[in-house]
Image 1: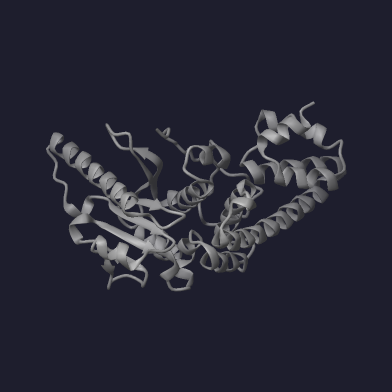
Image 2: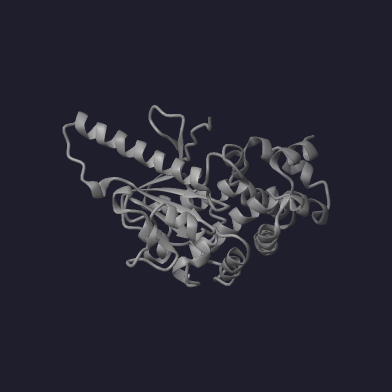
Length: 333
């Protein structure tokens, strides 16, 4: 059984680009989330959705269904209209929804499992409404969105899913009473409106999305958030385990990682020059650790003095590439 994960909002470091979007940091790291989910992609997709949707409502990751040993990947309840700049994602999140992202196209049993979770959620909400002697209209029940990189015609037909006339190409609706849609990511139009879903695709679809994100202005907050998450995913990847599509994705994600590395180091150097040599070097290290792990806790802070005894050209790649555990082992005095 997966443990339930709760994400806490807090003010993010002032070292990050400023924007009109609320910023936050996590009470747990990417690696913590990765070990509580199916794959590193699971961690990436859930954190990306949580980053973008949390300013507009309540996001719960790995939400346990009451009385069941089943978990919903992402459960979103809007409290305000999502920012229209999120494009298709904003439209999906305009009403309560369950979101189930998949790295590979889900099979029949996986789709049935998603539907079962949806029905259990509906049943629980209806029981609660009866206990409170309250009405619960059909349109207030959560809608299930399955995000899949591809989908076969046979799979779509088997569940009665048809192309939605009111939505973009690539979005298929199940029969209305099921309150379920599947987003076939590689069929989505290649437009800015679909960017934040195409980044969850595979192969060339994800590669193009990464290139579009890198082309955004450096002070774009979602560019910064996404590069941070792609970098964390890149560090967990094992190249020898990748198939052809994932190798294409890896090359794109690696490009994003290298760009993030250059920008992070340069930002740290600029701030360091403003603070003076010794204090500046310490600030560079602190900023690198913040970029990697979201915050510098007591254990990481205790490493900084040891790190600074090494040349910058030696410690910089280590700070960017090693895991938290490896850094503690490498630099612990």
